[in-house]
Length: 344
Ligand code: NAD
Ligand code: DAU
View (tube, rainbow, N blue to C red):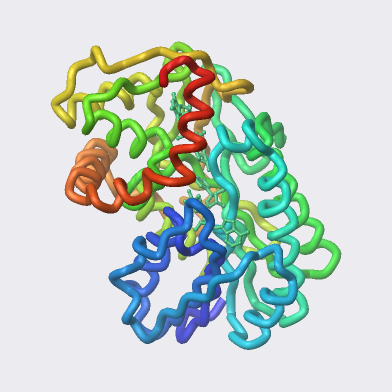
């Protein structure tokens, strides 16, 4: 795809990764323009983008990606060169609690965006998928792009269905669609329901942290800026119809992550509470990112311990941000979900 004067439509840009990606792109490319299309669900927050609000290269439009009329108009009017779709329901526990919305947004919403891209001749469609489509690993091996798709949660199943639709739109209509599948992101502006910001904000208040099962589940952690660099590279140099894995090369058990956070915050290990496991909990994720490294020359740059230290500092310095977020709808899910686990 062309690299100059790109008009980008970012769906779901008010969430964690989307907002970091928009900030990264505006800093990296003086002559790019970004339209951010977001419904502003509980996870969407315009405060995540306060620093770019006044930038004339950036515009926000509130819309639901499932609304075909609205999306059709936005794409026809904006004539984007590329669409990057971050918009999704993203929290695995919420998908277990109430799967319906996940199927609507993550599958139908993607289809609506792809239809608009197809009808308006958009040159690139990039779907931000997840390593969760591959299911769970035992103690060895890694997911490659050719690993079988074996999703285990309603969230993962909905993301897998969207990936399959993308493949079908590429084969059937020639939509220039590409999929990225990334591992667990961390960094600033992550909604404090995901383990790292959730635990940091609990620890700050000396509250116990609920570790699921035996704490031995493994995730591969990547800094959100490394994910943004990978998405940019795939956008510019990826081949339509292909899938690219993105990983951090940082496998850690949840109890290791918890202890790292406790140490960074100077809090005692007595705050750890082992609680009943997440149903269908994937044991281990690990990413083989040989393809993106060798074909597009991208590799993670942020050393994990340094990234975590900076991330913890960010949440401690931005308390008003997370205190505002941890209210309203947040509290109703939190109370319902963790009461079942016997901790509230
Ligand atoms: P998030 O929950 O922080 O943000 C999601 C954003 O999508 C929010 O701004 C929300 O308002 C918006 N949105 C939701 N439904 C919408 C709809 N119907 N119409 C328009 N906007 C809507 O999520 P995130 O963690 O930033 O994840 C972004 C993407 O990256 C998702 O597609 C997710 O599956 C994928 N992903 C996330 C991770 C991770 O570790 N967080 C890892 C790999 C892939
Ligand atoms: O792997 C990529 C995926 O990473 C993304 O596709 C998802 O959108 C994103 O939410 C994330 O999914 P996880 O389920 O891995 O993230 P979460 O932060 O919810 O959980 C991380 C690990 O921590 C997981 O093994 C479950 C565990 N956990 C989580 C919470 C919220 C706990 O032990 N206790 C908790 O309270």
